[in-house]
Length: 96
Image (tube, rainbow, N blue to C red):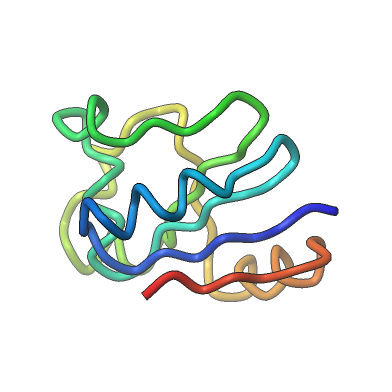
């Protein structure tokens, strides 16, 4: 059963809780201030297991002026892509 995990903060405790539940086939969508985790200098702080897709919301990257700075292995999506991701996974968990 695949899960879309949506995280909106760059809080260490929240990240630890979220990452502990990730499984192969899951996706982790970074929104709001969590998109900062996609910056190269944050790479050592954000460990995502193999088989988990890491995606950032393009609009939140753009608003924060970091679209061009995001690590290349992180995909991006729009709000309509967010909806499509929600429908493509059996469950959606929002981490706040």
